[in-house]
Length: 544
Image (cartoon, rainbow, N blue to C red):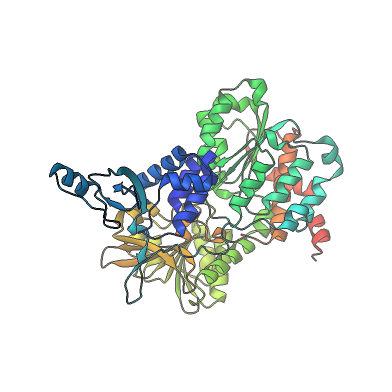
């Protein structure tokens, strides 16, 4: 959706998502002078007026729209100030409609509530007329895409490795996911479609599965949500509602709950079960985690009581994936800023892990002057040996830079960094979550905020005006991971390998082959060898 307030409201009320999308589209094509009447929109959308009114009231509370009361002429429906009308009544004066001139003290008007888009959500036009324009005049074409027909017709066309293992002899016959309640929290990119289909081939029942999604602006998120709902998935909801649905499970009978398998990205579900719903633990057969951040969250659990297979720490993922993530990050920055070259730009890179190393090399190859900070002494030594300048702190690294990129997996662009940024600096997250940039600090200091568009008038983020000296700080992708801003993060050939590893790890857990209560990456490496994943990948994709 275009407006974050609408997206947040849809996350809060998933049952109203389709209606909120329609309202978001309507607001997107409006100006601050446009008047919205809930009864008219309810009729247009064929929805209940009470629901439309309720949505507008919540959007008014969020500041996206403002609520106004008027008197409406019964003849021409012209709107006039309710206080002026009441004053005329009190003074026993006449009050004529400004449009059709009938006396409204005789033909009594209705008092109505309407809504308008807040002017603060749009910016002044640069034209000489200085009129207010709608800043949402164009949603980037890469947002809210439909699923390609060929993907629906043949989900495995571009992920043949997933096809192969979804029909692998002993897995196909044993149906490891049969009668399991699988809880997913993965990226809603188009490669999720073949992954879900592979899980179905191995016995998963959509009617017994929960699908949670993040608030990222994935290019086809809405289409994937609809696809899952059309296939009667048990739950399709934003990840902000994980606790709500876990609570419902927690209150169910043991027989109804059944065996639970978790496949997630980010370490949200496993800690929630341990810390808030421990009754469910006896039903959980294990979890597969695919990100380093998720493993960090799981490591904070005191007394882990389930097996966790760490794809995040596996050899294949660490050796294969970072180059694709880095390429997507660099490509997306260049797509967003087509008229700004890296050559000669001073860039701070905060985080020099596997992905950070790849990003640094690609930036240098594009002519950028890169300064590295990482809280690992070993990584800092490596950065120096690889010929990069290093800094003693994030704020030192960020001084006098054109770009500051966070790739640490934690909050790296904090208040200290924000306080020393130059006017015109671009902030970018290359992490898997919205952790890298302290958006709350930017909001706290903000004197003025407006949508950031590039020279092609595409929405690419937000510009904050901060003290001192009204510095303009540009946050690309609004602090979301840059590799997900309206684009696929990796080519499907690359995701085919990683998703296959996730699928096989989940299958091994479901078959009961790993029961130790530990975070285990060696097991994933063994699974990759057992199923000859790398060899089969080379054969199928004809590499090497």
